[in-house]
Image (tube, rainbow, N blue to C red; front, side):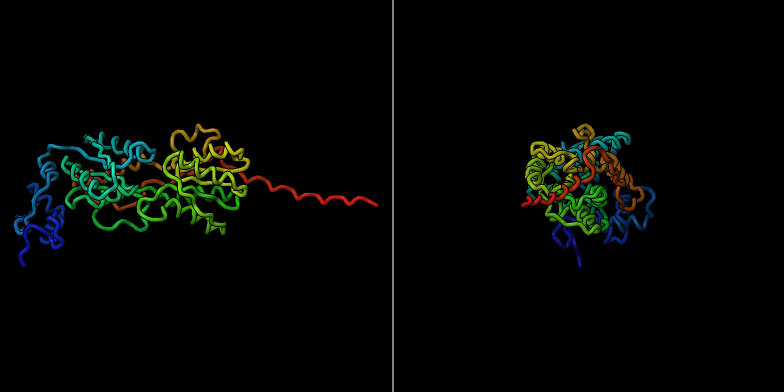
Length: 358
């Protein structure tokens, strides 16, 4: 069978298609393309023949990497302001600068398939590797749309199973972090913990929600229905107003610290004392969390380290270093502050009224 121009699925053949057809690794194909001297002559001839047969055409990225004219990476993200996103970008920039690379940012302004693919194409044309922050629908679609021949690392939610395939991922252990924060509130004596959730990128139940539920089930505690929040204080405020009306609510975990900020405001307006009547815990340990009144109990994740790790994996791909086994980047750290405490003591029963004597 003679194959030329496109693979069976109609896609233009990439470097991994060449590697499979030639029976070599994609690193070997890259070395042949870049005229690396370490490839055996027979192997080089076989790879070159396969390239010609498949009609493989080098991308702009491959040409730039081969010529040495670029030392840059592009980060694709739908958000640059929320704490987790911004701190991850900071880590990428710090690590890239130390390695002599520049960093460009491509903002995914829409999550439609056409717009995401267009942004991925623009990023690919810059001639460097990609880091995709896949915490939302736009990011997930962008990661899936990156061409096979383009070096890419995904920054993702905690995966439900170890990453498969050739594209490395990095993540923080959100699920364990949520378990840790929920256990803290239960250990204080609260009967259960209510949850205000951030949106999930890839599934109906996000990993932070799953970790909260894990801890409740392990303790045999009731499982309240989680409230859908957003990413910002306004979403927390709306959820907090609903929770404040329920006198049985004594502990609330929020999917990030911005949500907790809104919840605290709503409880304050409702006259619910924190932590005397209701304990509140956040997530991420954003810089403002220590300066709220009361200061916020939260769980810290190393987003800056996550960004450094993402660049490190990508740098390894660009330099053809040995791949690093996938693993979460950091261990969650519980930061206990003023906003969490024991539940209020139950009110004593009313004494029986005295019957007047005749």
